[in-house]
Length: 270
Length: 351
Image (cartoon, rainbow over all chains, first blue to last red):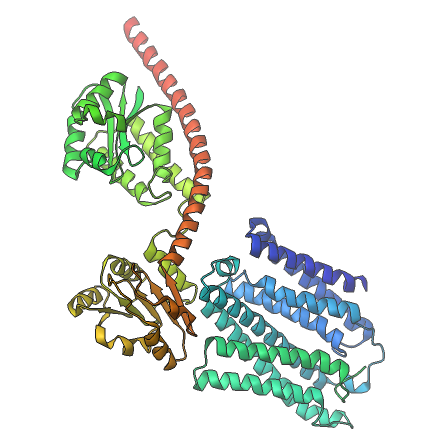
């Protein structure tokens, strides 16, 4: 079944290409088949994750590259739900670009971790990681829609009526999508932090509030909190709130990858 | 029976010639009634729009009918060059082109289909149509619809007012909850307001140098008139400005908009539909301001029209195919009917 690990990025690249053709060339055939291809890819991804969980007797959330494949999966599923619910089918290409990057990183660097530390077998860890993953997925989606907002805004401001202008939904929809994703992201991140605060000091002897990842996550949480409060009370709209969401994503990505790989702390398992 | 057409259109004649041969509603009824009394004309439909006057006839006598039509319509010898006279399958092809909007001045426009229906139903009401024109016109309506379904000949806006509002839809999901300020009360402003009326957009403010005119226009849409000297205050919480005055100088200068934008955080979208321009082009460099002018809109209109021209080629293929099919069926049916008539005649003679 390990071949699924190799097939998955290829499948995502194929799906991404079909979404790309549909977006840039407005081809009818690709428009029709793209969502079915995504269904198939997501189903195979689910099988892969289940197989991995059974084979290694733990869910694939114990190292950064396992987490990347789970995030790729949750992003693809979240996008499918968005496409079905909103019937906006033109943004898939941009979400799938991130999915492909995450899956390729995972495929190349994933390790078969057979001996999982006892600390990672806790149920609270499951809730903590799942919340954090959902939060990160939502933040990613928010940033992608934020980026699309900026691209469309730029086209409108410079009076260019190219593909971006023609194919993307309007600015208000993009802003709404980005902001809704931010709210979900903030909610899940809050859960992850609360569970973490309860569980981490009990689970780790070397627990420290100066852990880089902990500081990073708290910083991200504060950024999103500022955004939400400013939106509610200071009526922050449009580009201001979009830039905040993109900044939050960049710091999150930095926190999840670079900090995880290059800084030491209790929040690192191999 | 022969299918005949005598007509004049924007493609063959300038407006000063066309207007001489257009029919008022009353003239049209009188002419139909007059022709229905004439023996050599079996069926007749007259189509008269601002771009064309066409007489569709079913008759056995081609040249007699042509001469009669020319005489009765009072066509001057010098003007004959502007008219076209078509027979049988060419009439079918032409009518299908007309119903599909291929032959229209604005390619793909939908109004022609309604005008064609009006012409046909008027003739039907006056009993000047029969089996032949009933079949032909009903088929023409179906072909008109088919072409619009199978091609994009009618897609893409090509009027300044609709394109301007379509541009706004790229920014806003709904214009109903936006504050829209229209400056000027001329024809373009009225067109924009009509479009808003269709879309049930009510929150519109109208400003004009002559306040009374602003009031009149604002009442049309249950909007609110604004004093021209209060423009600056209104701009502070306006989302969209559409300016279409006939002013020879700039109305909204950069300094004014900069001052307004310093007091607000939300974006301001400005559409300048005036010529000479109402809005200082430098305004587009101000943060949070989006400005469209007529040239920008014309880019879209030209693009949309180019697409329609391309689609017209596809449409023409459909029309020709349908016309050929229709004509084959027509000949078949006519031959059978003719043979039946001969048999009945022979049977009558024997008995």
